[in-house]
Length: 166
Image (cartoon, rainbow, N blue to C red; front, side, top):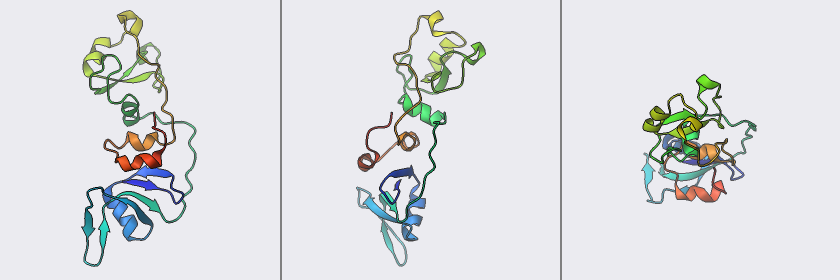
């Protein structure tokens, strides 16, 4: 479920249980229900299964200048594909190995399949004759964190997320 601030800016994705609790307690309202039209029933109330909810009061969100490097974020940035061969990514590879002075940063880490990670091992790309199709960089866009943790984003969310996070 997508949680919007009172000003309709996206805040986070949250589990169904938490979304329903916010709606039932009056802290949020349903903006879009489940496209299947499902509803949750209790003894005294019936709540449509929400896809997008909006908080009743505005919540101030602190600004973070640096984007934290996480496995989920890295996999989402590289679209769960190995940057070397295009197969399904299972691991993270340091372009310049850490043993050779490479940093653990967005610019030096890429998603990789186990086969390519094993073949590359402790080598530099130039030693293998490999090259990257694009230069790795930190993801940008205000809403990349939402999509990094949600593998099945509802199409209804896109109108609130604006430009695609990359």
